[in-house]
Image 1 (cartoon, rainbow, N blue to C red):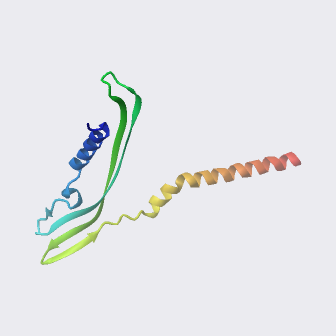
Image 2 (cartoon, rainbow, N blue to C red):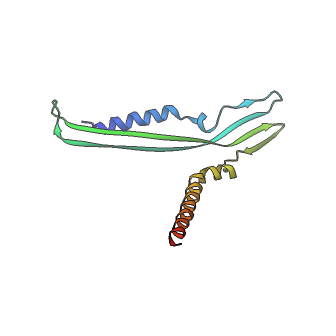
Image 3 (cartoon, one colour):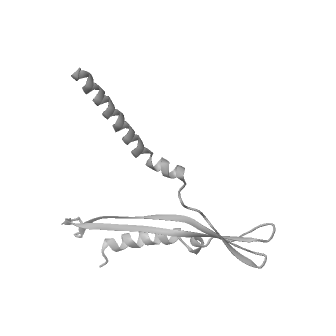
Length: 133
């Protein structure tokens, strides 16, 4: 008798297989008007988790009650383009390094909190000085 977790895992893995194929990594070739062929290449990252539990009580069919779930996440990041033409093959890397603006926006909440705490500290010190006068 197969355990229900097996069916749960089978369905999840089948759905992942449906979303991912070789064209996800090596994209379809694009031919330009001047005869150059451009092939996109991407990096694929997959995360997967699953779990379940048998409950002590039995259902009306006499089988143990089972509860479970599974999930997956996929990230596709373009990394380069292969350019084929004029008897040459070149690679054009895709720059995925965050810009200074991206870094600043990522740190913005921390900067606001720091500035806010500095203003609160200055306001408290001014209030303490006025009370001592």
